[in-house]
Image 1 (cartoon, one colour):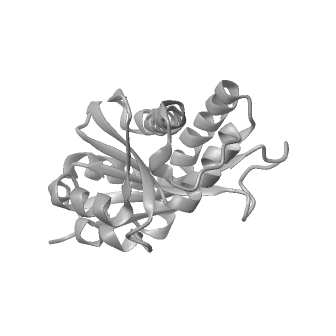
Image 2 (spheres, helix red, strand yellow):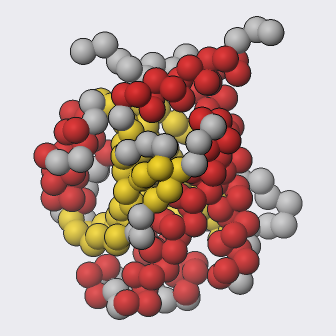
Image 3 (tube, one colour):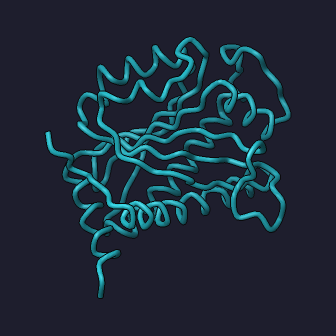
Length: 218
C-alpha cells in the first residue's frame, strides 16, 4: 500500500516546528499548574506503518505507563502518550518527589499526575494543529494504563492501530526545573516519552497538503 503521509525532510522539519510550538505552550501550562519549570520539546518526528509499532518496545516485559485520549471535533482518532519504565519513574520523581520501583503500586494521585501531563500536552499539540488545519480539535478525558509494554502494544496493534494504516510518532522530551535560559532539555536530565498520533487517512493527507504549501517556494 502506498504511503498516505510521506514527508520530505523539509516538510518533516516544518511539521516538527509547528508541533514544538504547541508543546511549548503545554510546558508553560504545566509549569503554572505544578510549580516547576517544565520544558517540553519534540526532537524527532516520523511516520510509521501500523505493523512496526512493536519495534518501539525494547523491553517488552517492563512495566510502563501510557495515557490514551480519543480525538473528536474535526477529526476522529487517538493520541497515545507512552512512557517506558525509566522515563515514567523519572518524570514522577521530578514532578512529585516520589520514587517508586514498581509502577503498578501507583496510587490515585500518582496516576493523576500522568493524566494531567497527557491532558495538557495533548491540548497544546492539538491547539498547534488546529491553527494549521483550520478547525477545532477536541479530546476525551485521559485514561491512564499501566501494563507491560509488550502486552500494551500488542493489544493496540490488534485494535486501534490496526484501524489506521499509518501513524505519526513523536519523541517527547520533558525536562523539569531546567535552567531559565534553556530552550530544550539537556541529555540525562529529561524524561523521554513517545507520542503516537493515530489519525485517519483524510486528516493525514490534509496535514501533508498544508505542510507542503508552507514549505513550497512563494
